[in-house]
Image 1 (cartoon, rainbow, N blue to C red):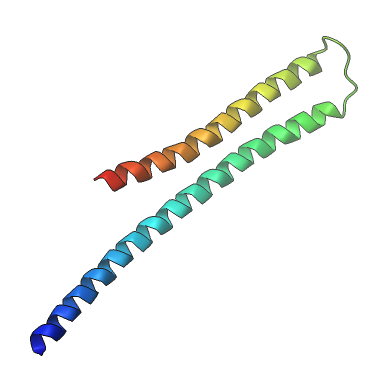
Image 2 (cartoon, rainbow, N blue to C red; image 1 turned 90 degrees about the vertical axis):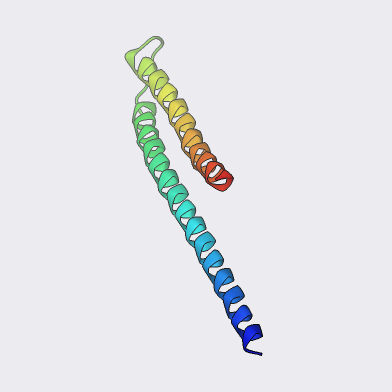
Length: 100
């Protein structure tokens, strides 16, 4: 009877430790993704403000404002790429950690 209870206690302890490990690992992944998304949204928000200010000015053909909007659109495109890279990097880290 004591052996059965001891075995059951060991199995429950192993299960609890395993569950705790994966819960902590998942929690850290969620926090990293959240921080990355917040950082990227801040970057996109700055670009949006810049484009909005320029759009309020009447534009003329080949004016410096048009060139500035063009550059802001390029920067916004780069920011979207940056978001995708951060999110994919977190997923790659998760995959590489699971392979170990």
